[in-house]
Length: 186
Image 1 (tube, one colour):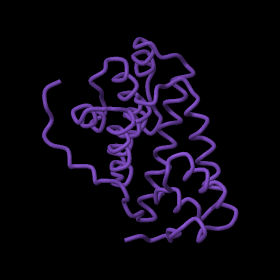
Image 2 (cartoon, one colour):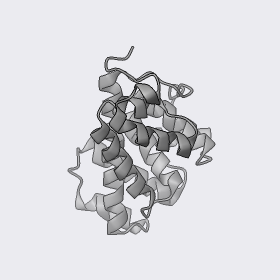
Image 3 (tube, rainbow, N blue to C red):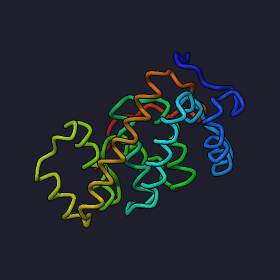
Image 4 (cartoon, helix red, strand yellow):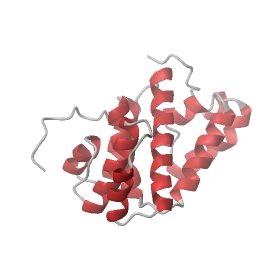
C-alpha cells in the first residue's frame, strides 16, 4: 500500500510536473508509477529525469545500465525496481533470465559487463568506500575514468529510485520479479 500519494493521472499531478510526465508518456508510451510519485515534487522529477537523460548519453551501453540497476535494486531490496528493471532487461536490453539472475547477484555472464556490475555492487556494499584494487579491476576490463564515474552515478540514481519507492510504497506496475533461486556455479 502506498504511503505517499501517487497521482492517478497526469492531470492529477502538480501543474509544474505535468509537462515532464507528458514527455515520459510520449517517450515510453505510459507513465509508470515511479514517475507519478516523483511528480509530487516537480523539482525531484526534473532532477531525476535530467540525470537519467544525461547518463543515457554517457559511455555505458544500455544493457550495462540495466545490469547495474538490477544489482543495485537487489542490494537495496527494492521490489518495484527489481520488477521494472527485470522487465526492461528482458524486453529492451534483451537480457536472458540467467543474465538477470546473475546481475541481481552482482555479476554478469558477459566478462566486460561483469566488471562494471561487480564494481557497482561493491560501491553499494562499501557505501562508496571502494579500494584502489576495485578501480584497477574495472580499468583492466576496459573501462576508463569517465565510465567509472558514470557507474557511481548509476548506483546513486538507482539508489535514489529504490529509496523513493520503498519510502512511498510505490505500487508495482510491472510484472513482479521472481525470487532468486539458488546460486549456480559460475
